Length: 471
Picture 1 (cartoon, one colour):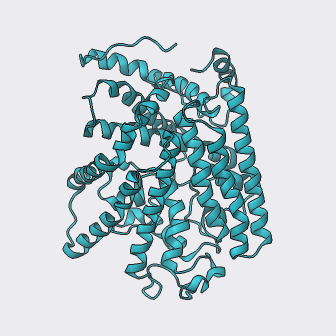
Picture 2 (tube, rainbow, N blue to C red):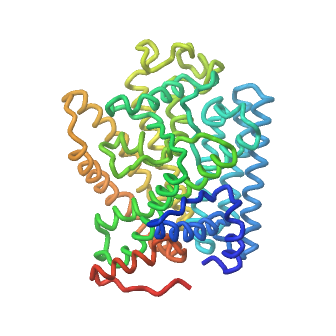
Picture 3 (tube, rainbow, N blue to C red):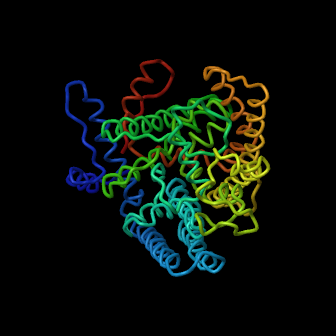
């Protein structure tokens, strides 16, 4: 809960906050305006990272962020001073190790909340590190932001966001430029079987639209927290769906939305979408390449997929012919060019490597969050099995040339994912009670629309109690 003093102080400062996006006051907007007030409280919690008056935790987080910032400044200096190659890569490694070890050492997921600690460790130990490693190879988002001011570059490096890739600089690698071209043409083409791409570009500067999306996700969290205790006991598909979209998708979406809003308001950055309605996915390719957590997808593409399909480690012109792969001119290496198009074996290897890397990072994260000393490899298996599923979908599409309507493919896709999740993704969460800990953390927050949902659920005679107001 947010202390009264914190709430009063935030109420006083809210009009000057770069994240305060006011809604127009009109008749009929009362519910939405009240929800915005509740969101302000939640954002005060999240912006303070839920630390309240715990100065010890504040000190830990300050240390983590300061160390990460110093490491990023060092990495940028190394990148400018050291030529591409093994030496530069080795000089980046101490920063990568520090980003992994420091959060895992200072934070305790059992004492300081699984959501807070999990997000901090994932952000620095995984997302930020993948950007850094790609940067050491002259690839990725940090390379595309190379000419930006230092503060903007640090924001892109340290926060979970995707910069707009449609305006590619000359330093972009061939596969990155081609992927960006694919993203800009996304709405003009039917969905293909391609397993890589940045997804659609969404430019919507409307403050009202931002609040609508953000409030929608917070309401999904509220509904999931209220409904979960009253669902049929034991693991079941309904519970899994609610947790996947009402908790995982909505929580990550809110975090990414807040960072995107801050970056847009404070630095004028144009960001690409982080999620794109994953509940409307029509295939495994559609989920992972275009709709689900595209922050991670972009990092995997930059660091894992692109080097494999290009046959070289270094991006841009500097990497031509490096790493034992064929020399391909950057000006001609576009996927639409049959000469430069990577072979099916390279694409298969790259796709498999991306899912394997994602699975391993998820496995490390859940081991640390749950206190396990040895991995069970279930999360690794869940993500790795997506690779043959993507390949099979592409093969069927090419052989049959039949495209089923979305009304058919959406339930089929969700059904396949539920089967895999029931076998590999959710069992370790249930055994370690990770799902209960996440819900416990969320239930302590005053989420917008919570009271309204409680009343509506009670009126529907669903047997749900009308809880009292949060303390």
